[in-house]
Amino acid sequence: MLSTLISLAIVAVGAAAAPTSTACNENNCLRAIQASAFPTRHGTADCSSYFLTTITPATTTFTATATAFSTTTVPFTYTATVDVLAPRSTTAPLKKRYDPAALVRHRSASLAPRQATIKPSSIPTYASACSGAAGYSSACSCIGATAARTTAPAPSTTVTITRTAIVTASSTTTVATATAQCSSFLLQALGGGDDANGFPINGLYAQVADADDGLGDDVIYFVADPAAASLLALSPAGALSTTDGYIANSDAGPAEFLLYFNTQAEIDAYGYAPATCSVTPASTLQCVDGSQTMFEICLGLVDAGGGVVFSSEADPECVPIAFKVVPSC
Image 1: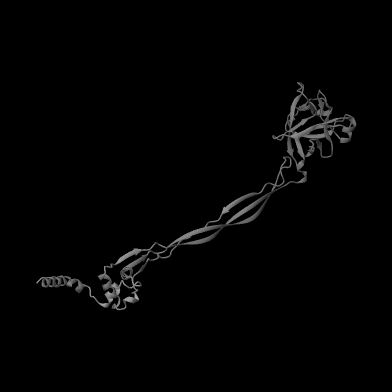
Image 2: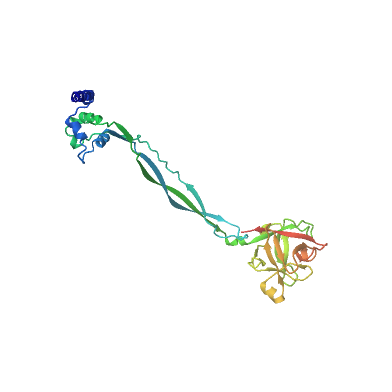
C-alpha cells in the first residue's frame, strides 16, 4: 500500500512539470546548448553573446590647423636731401612694416557621419541541430539568455591641416644726399642799430672787404643785396672763413677789438688769434676768442662806418649785434 502511494505521488509531480516541457521543446537543438559536459561548449555564454547588440557611435573628426609663416622682403629706397650744416648720418637705420596677409579660415561642409550597429548573426557549429536563427534563439531563451545592448566607446580621429601665411616685410633705406656748396652760408644782421649814414643795419648782409687801413686787413661791411654778400664757411675746427681763404681773427685780450679777416700766413706771422665759431640751434653764429664772446657795432672805428667789434663786455657807446646763419648753396 505504501509503495502504491509513492508511485502515485511521483506521477502527480511529473504531471505538474509537464507545462514546462511543453514550453521548451527538449529537442536536439536545446540538448546541444545544454551539453555543459563538453568543455568546448559554452552554451549560456554563447547565447548571451548572440543576443548582444553592439552600438558603435559615429567617428568624431577633430581638425587641427597649423599655420606656417613665410616672410618676403621687398626693398624700398627713399632719397632725401639734408642740410649739411646740421650734423647728420648719411644713412638712416632701416625701418620695417609689416603687413600681415589675411589667413584662410577652414570650414567643413561634409555631412554628419552615422553610428554603426552590429547585430548578432553567428550560430556556434555545435548548435547545427537548431533550425536556423529562430530555433537557436528559441533554445537560448529556454536556458534563460536574454537580449541586451551595449555601446562601444566613441572612436575619434584628428586631421591636421597645414596652411601657409605669407607676411611681406618692406625694408626702407633712407639715403641723405647733399651738394658740395651747401656748407657755405651768408651772415644776416640781427640788431646793430644804424650805420654811419643813419641807415638801419638790421636785416642787411655781411660783406668782408678791405678795411683800407694800409695793412691788408679785411673787416665786415653791410650790404642790402645778398648777391653782394660774402660766402662764409666753418672748418671742422670751428674757424670762420670766407670761401677764398680769409679767416676771422682778432687781437685777443681783455679789451674790445675789431673782428678782422686775414690769410693763414698773416695770422701765423703776426700772432693773431683766430676765433672759434659754431652755429647755435637757433641758427645764429656764436664765436669765442679768449674772453671775447660778443659782437657790437661801434661807429667811426673804420672808414665808411664798417667793422664789427668783438668784445668781452658790453660797451655803452656801442650797439649789440647778432648774426643769423643763412645757408647759401
